[in-house]
Image 1: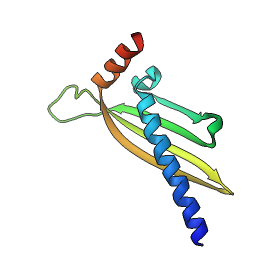
Image 2: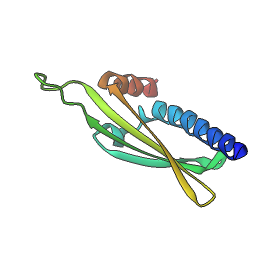
Image 3: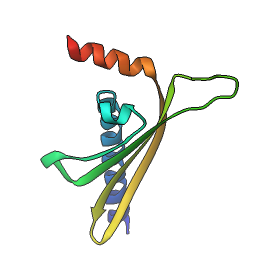
Image 4: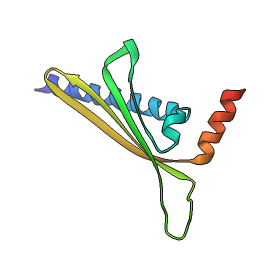
Length: 106
């Protein structure tokens, strides 16, 4: 039981690290920036892990446009016959995407 718990903890740590890296990459995903969905995997280094993301504008009272985007990112992986998942949510400012676009042009 202890070995299984340690393995599961390692899998969740890997998923959290991959989620953090993918959130940074999403700043450059033009499809997702327009209130969209996107998905992918982590390549040959992490073949069992996949990700899916959704972005939508944040609506705040008394503001026509808040300039915030809500991002929900889910990392899934299979271990044995079970599928596991880790979901993180955050908000990004529209200026985060403008900065990313400007960096890409350089």
